[in-house]
Length: 329
Image (cartoon, rainbow, N blue to C red; front, side, top):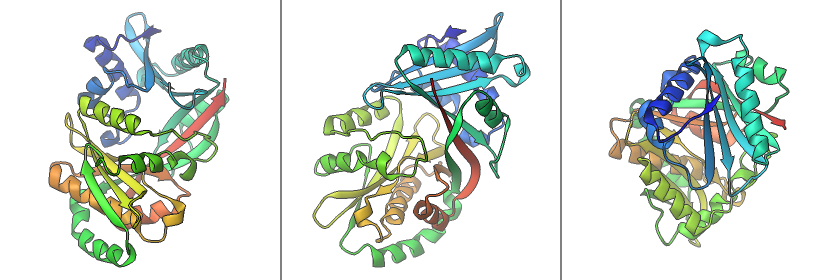
């Protein structure tokens, strides 16, 4: 087992190729491309410490692992990925990678490891779920991954925009690219700080992050540095405060697929179709700024009825199930 020197592009590509082959059962558009990974993985995130691990049989790479340690919040957690190359499964590769991932997490003072398992509909069981359960991991949350053909969906947007216009009342939707407007950034950070406690997350127990203005600006700078363009929108109440938010991210290194980040409306401001209004604004911006980007991907808990209704109205379809497992170490 060797830790990857992420400044060595040949070793980084070797890790990526092993990982990508290991997850080749997933829809290809949902697997991060090398063009994106080579930039994002080579640069350390300001608030996360990421360790990449490659397992070898001799000099042949047979497995890949990742340990992601949040450094500013949730200090008891380690996010992890554990994979084994399809040609080398059944020989303890996955178990060896998992053992190293847990050892690294424990050495960093983490008490709980979270892993994800992706499987096709109906999302009941797979080799990944059996592997996790056999090693003491319990299911903490279920999400649905959905995809939208933005070109096919676009003709329906004008009708949806007329519908939400009658419901939003005195609320406004403000959209921007890359940098939150100065007059909104403090309120935007305050709303973002409540996200984790408001979205359904099952038994994951992930705490909120304190999104100060400095943290918002640092995050925006990091995205620019790795070539990610955020297309954001916020719902603004009559008093000028941000009460809802959503966003899309597109990589300039491979702009074929956009990914939806968090979408949330504060409970006391729901019932005005703000979620749909904000998503329409970001999807309009996507078509205008990145016409070559056709596919939009999102995920949310399958019990999140309000967001499921928003996504259904836009035409999203379920393409994969995401099962989140955790274990105390």
